[in-house]
Length: 378
Image 1 (cartoon, helix red, strand yellow):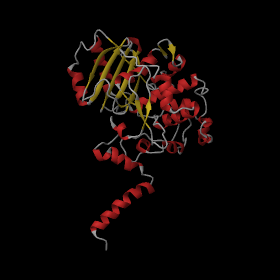
Image 2: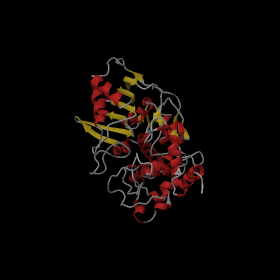
Image 3: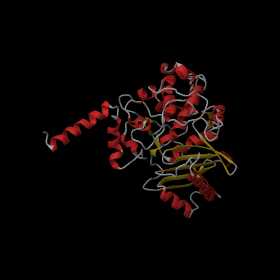
Image 4: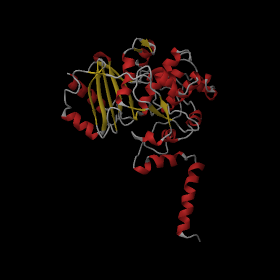
């Protein structure tokens, strides 16, 4: 009989083999990066543990600083919220000038952190840019023009617009806290392209909203084919440089070998630089007199497409609060960049936690961050 020590050694050798046999090899990476350190999901600084491409910067364009800059203190309610939800950045910009900013937990104005699904809005913007540049015909262009895997049955009706509006009908399941979910596999796999191309369209595309990260990932793969550039370079040339971003931004890739950007997530940047896309959309695509993005595309991007989802359009979340029309992008754990055009207002909140939606379209904290911003600017 084998000794207990030998049994233990054999078991330790067999565990990683079983992971790969049962297509769970990504879990080894997941355990190493997060689970072994007590994390039950992705976390703000995890980008340092992954391979990254870089969104390069051009000439820096600093934000204006308001003459009201930080002349009001946070309320006790905001202090408690930021403490309990482990906020790292809270930034208020009005009339394109910074009115208030504060950083916590060792972060500062140039600190960067994972955006998670805030990146989806950037990918949607790149779709608009690719249409504007003539690389993609329209929102109605079939996905099968780029990937023949989606050329039969229901998949033949799938368009790039369906991907941006979260109506693909793909058999993907959005689940952030299960290590065995396809969402976790998407995050840790070293070949995300193969994972996405193995999916099937099981519901008729373009008929109803269903939030799936797979949609944005497939859209990102199409953009690379259509433009002939990797996503980081196309984002840099189209927006990051023209908008004067300060910090070269890491964008996670699946592996050095495949170098496929995780389009559904994971641009790491600062609150100040994340606010720039909201400013561009607030200005209907114009930046310093140059039309970076078609205004019609932007108007479409912040207009609901489906009656079952008045809170979502093309890569952006929508809300009406206190009779003010709001659009914003958001990411896992409470990354928020909120735009209120009526008051020429942008609010960025980054951090480690946020109250769950619990069946509602927007977290209760979303509303609180808005209310507290108005207290500060009034």
